[in-house]
Image (cartoon, rainbow, N blue to C red):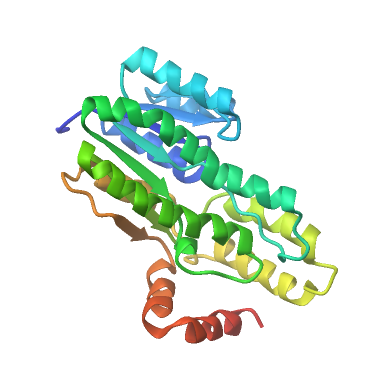
Length: 276
């Protein structure tokens, strides 16, 4: 028996963690809106009893129109799951600033804009939960990932400050830090990385990174299914007092532990021993 039915908006719901989470929350009885650019890839959400809306988090009008539809139909948003995101990898030297800027537009500024627009509704209701999907990459780092890790490290600090601002209004801010999760994330990342950096001065490390990424997404038991993160998100939504951070998925806890307790130099050696 479900405690309270909530209106939940999830971005990036056309695949991976976003889709898995949306389907789980629909099964749990919530009113779920999946938002993504590819509406046609959310038919299964609609068939399961959810709603699909077109939203491009880099387009302000698209964000406003998508949210307006949810408010018009439901009158509120109880939970916002900021899940839309992707990774660009490639050396800093060989990655264009335009590509880097787009990475921040999707992973940070788009998320921030949607959050800004949702907040007045949550304040009026004197409740709400903002769940930001960060990554273990918000606490650790890998070579060729400077721009991606930059967005996730930024999201961590942004979320921490936001949590303090919203406490007075009864609104929770939760950070989820997934490890290696089996989604199309790896495929989206590796081809452009090879394009940027596989021929120049960073060719050696790029080829090694490609193998490491491919292995972590394709070898059995080297990554976790998206359901692991959907479970954690569901747990955070149910909690009367959710944790500020949830860590789940392959490699997340050990990698974060090494960085936190053994320091940067030991962490650097651990990472580089894997990419020789």
